[in-house]
Image (cartoon, rainbow, N blue to C red; front, top):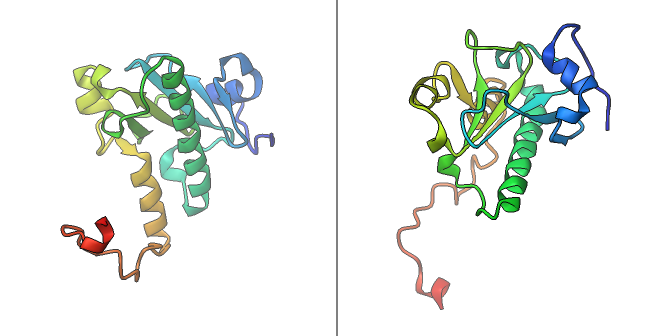
Length: 175
């Protein structure tokens, strides 16, 4: 495990990362996963960056590997818990992964919400607080936006198969 690059005195999440291992459900090189103290669904985790980054709007394309590791780690924990409970793997339509944007930040330290199933969420949480839009940004959208803003090309761009229509399957593909 690598050490945290930056820490801020008085930051709740920096304190959890450095000093409160008992609250950590999963620990990776760049992030830890904890339970949300005010869960909105049966499974509501926070994936907390070990590096103190104040808010998602401070991120750059250089932070994409961190975001991808945070998402991967949160998904791993969710799958482990579902498996332990005898449930099937995650249903993407019932999963919400993302970040609150300013001004709707309760803690100024980068943390990703993993919420499952979203059907457990109350009306205000589902339709306002955690609804993709102006105050909540899905992780994949944030990653794609950072890449686009930095001019990172789409890896499928120029691939002739990218725009193939798959409405008819050739007979030789079936036999």
